[in-house]
Length: 172
Image 1 (tube, rainbow, N blue to C red):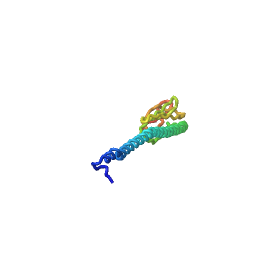
Image 2: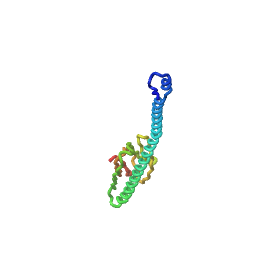
Image 3: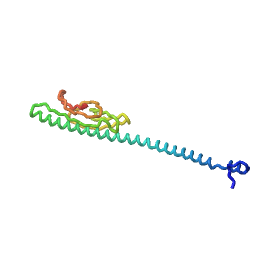
Image 4: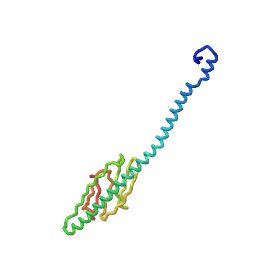
């Protein structure tokens, strides 16, 4: 048996030159690395957009829930103001209404603002990152003061100074 790495015979040199096994292992290894890198890069690119879409959906859903809570609390304060106005007609005392509303300071790890608008009656919640806006409608009998507050704990109170009385939303 001849060994291809021994010098001496001409046929062994030809065998050594035609032997491509060591080259093919290296080339196969390099090709496998390139294919694996392309696959991992493709998967990360494809799922990156999906993660951003899911985050935007989560922010939109949470803002909607917060908006519905603020609308419900405005309605509750309005009902209390109506009862207080009815009672004040009998007792002669000014009605007092104050509700504390506990809200998260962030939704899906992003800060948000709550804008109370009166024409039309709606609550606009806006998040910065991702850029999402949610509108929730409300209806009250008492007028509501327009304002914009950061998302966090709020206070809804009946301000009896203006004529007619109005509900005001402020940061707690």
